Image (tube, rainbow, N blue to C red):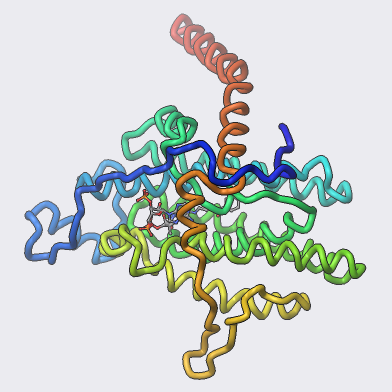
Length: 346
Ligand code: BYC
C-alpha cells in the first residue's frame, strides 16, 4: 500500500463529487395522527421499543435513511483503515505493530458486518462499493486528514475511536435490529481500540520532551476534526429530526459532541497535554465544559472532497479494490466448483 500520508494533498483542487443527498421523502415530521394507518402502526412499534427486522413492513424513507447511514458507516470503517495502514511498517516495536495490525483488521470486520446489515435492506455490497469508488458516497470526514507521525496512531485511537464509541453505543439500541446487533460487537472492539490509542499517548507523554511534543502536536491536529465527526450542529442537521422519530438516532449530534468533550478533557489533563482551544472552560452551573466554535467551513470543504487527503484516500481505496480482483475471482470460481460438485452428488 502506498504511503502517501506524509504528502499533504493540495486542498481546493479537483474532485467536485461528494453530494449524496438521498431523498428520503421525509421533508417534515408528521404527528402520529397524521400518518397513514400502516405508517402509524410502524411508528407505534418503534415508540414501544420493538426492533424492526428486515422482513417487516417499513416506510421507504426509513429504509433509505438506514441504507444511507449504514453504508456511510461501512465506508468509514474500510476507508478508516487507510490512515493507520500508513504506519504499519513504521510501528516502533513488534508488539505495537501486531496491535496496530489487529486493530486495522477489526475495522475491515466492522465494514463487513455493516455492509451485511445494509444488504438486509435490499441493496447489494457491489452497488454500495461502486458508489464509494465513484466518489458518490460519503464516509466520515475524519479519514481525510493525514497521519504524520507515530503519535497520530495514539491520537486516532484515543480521540477518533473514542468518539466513535460515544456515537455508536446508542446505536446498539437503535430501532433496526441488524444494525443494532452489529453495533454490539463493533463497540466492544472499538473500546480496545480507544485503550490502545490512549496507551500510545501515555507512553509518549512519559517519554522524552520530543515525544511529549509529538503527542501534543497530534492532539493539536486531531482535536477539531474529531469534534467534527459528530456531524453539523443540531440547528444545521437536516436528518436528525426524522432519524430521532424513527429511533435511528437516540441523541443529537451536539449532545454526543458535548459528551466527547466532557469525557476527553480530564483524560488530556492526565496526560499533561493541552486541548488546543483557548475558549475551553468548565462550567460549574451546567456541569459541562464549554468549548470554542468549530470551523464549519473546513468541515464542509472536507465533505465536498477538498480535505487534505480526500483524493488520496479514494485513489488508494480504488487501487486496493482493483488489486484484489484476482482474489475475488478465485473465491467465486471455487464456490462455483463446489456448488457444481454438490449438485452432481445430489
Ligand atoms: N463526515 O443531518 P446530519 C469510525 C453528513 S467510523 C462526513 O447530521 P445524520 C472509525 C451526513 O451524512 C465513523 N459526512 O446527518 C472507523 C449528511 O449527509 P447526507 C463513522 C458527515 O446522518 C475506523 C449531512 O452531513 N460513524 O468511527 O443524521 C477506524 C448532514 O448531517 C459527517 C458513523 O457513520 C461526517 N463527520 O448524522 C476508527 C456512525 N457528519 O447523507 C474509527 C453512524 C455528517 O444527507 N452515523 N455528515 O448527504 C451517524 O451517527 C450519523 O450518520 C452522523 C450524521 C452523526 C455521522
